[in-house]
Length: 155
Ligand SMILES: [Zn+2]
Image (tube, rainbow, N blue to C red; front, top):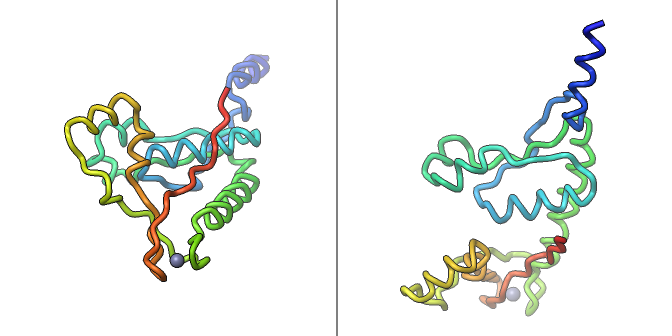
């Protein structure tokens, strides 16, 4: 009899009391949220663990392994497929436009000097301004180009 009531309680949990498994780790709050948004778009039930700790205390985040992307147990396979798709897409986006090489890495841009004014702008614009300070560097031809951030359509 009391078991029926327990089942009703599980309605508050979208997976019916299932466990969540970490399928990817992030050290970057922005990356984590972009991937989270993509998975949610595809109906994956997921959330970020240790997100607040990382944001508040970056030193502590090293000790606990960063931000974990937690996915509902029965959706892990689908989520991994979507993640792979995102990674392939990012590989395409980060291809060097000059020589077509994939030997490209995101580096901190030395072009933009940090001064008190840009610090204030960064603060006002939130964390997205930080990403703008990074640039892609091609290690094959030394060409540098701005990273393409997948467009986020949030309503
Ligand atoms: Zn190149």
